[in-house]
Image 1 (spheres, one colour):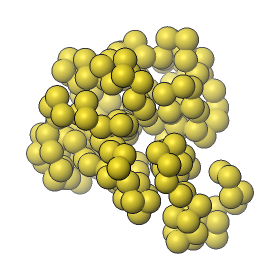
Image 2 (image 1 turned 30 degrees about the horizontal axis):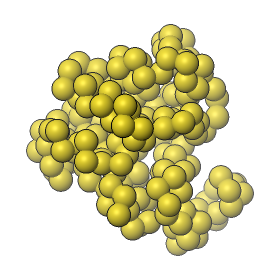
Image 3 (image 1 turned 120 degrees about the horizontal axis):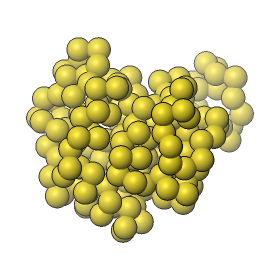
Length: 186
């Protein structure tokens, strides 16, 4: 079974993180919250009790997901252990996924060089590496990025598909097509 780690750093964007975890678990993918501490407070003061605390076991995952949230992204950018683990996962060709402001942490780790990506509005002027696109979700090899809170559903469904899950079945159970004006392949 494929395993996904969603990184929970102080100041993380709760809506993004929990939507991703929820959709992947609905799609029968093991998805764990990996915190910088056991209990981490998000940007909107919601405290999340994480499944485990960041360590070398992150390397056992097939995919790592970085939700946004300005504070969380700043914490990721300053954590040398985390940036080193991202490099090692990238070298092993594992999926590195980030949304909203989190591609800035990928830039700090030098993972956006010669890569296409997307991010929260305005980050096309903040991030100097790579090629910024305005798409909801951008996939460039093992790097997957998305725009922000409103795109977390499209992002999570795409991650589910990349891991071999059935996003269409999950979308139908979640009445995705009733709530959003999207086609079945979005």
